[in-house]
Length: 67
Image 1 (tube, helix red, strand yellow):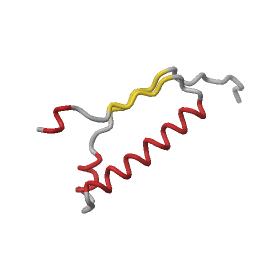
Image 2: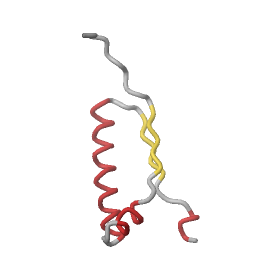
Image 3: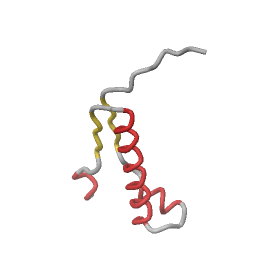
């Protein structure tokens, strides 16, 4: 068994998309999809802190969402 450790990435970027569609495809309200997405963001953020990832970028909204 190897004892070599791998380093975490310095930067993780996530495009958050599809929470509303995910909920609707399961017969849920869109807000429930956004709540599930928020819980995922919390888990990812905590994981990045624990792994000592220096930068986490979350792309959450675009003006195109208004169309």
